[in-house]
Length: 146
Image (cartoon, rainbow, N blue to C red; front, side, top):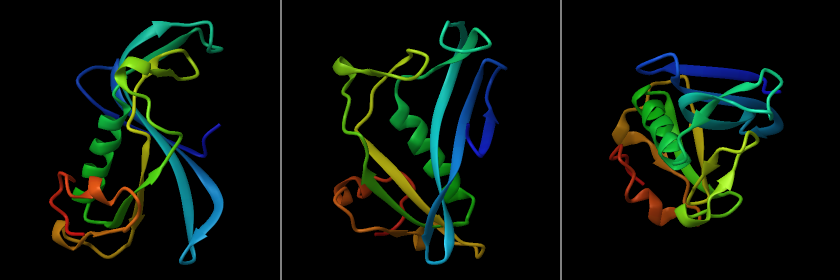
């Protein structure tokens, strides 16, 4: 089970952004590191893979939910640094994977790394981790500098 679950409401009760966070044993510059997963729920369906026999159906474009979260965090003015790290590998639309409740999803395989600070940071002051996915950063919609 996750240590923290957050939801952002959308148009109806069936639609939401659902963020799950787990506190890891790692530290970054003395701060706790949280590991998370976000999905955009687009409906409700019956399933045998859940003890409640119902689940939210997820939008298969999980990268879009990841990007929306990064944008929201940038506009919060507490995002100090962003980067992309390799995840489990790409799963193109024609070769989708499945989540625990068998919803298909596709991804470019990258994970977003976000570093927050209590001091406000403007969009133009957000820094980027210079990792292997640096080319993706040039297309970041927030307009933040590298």
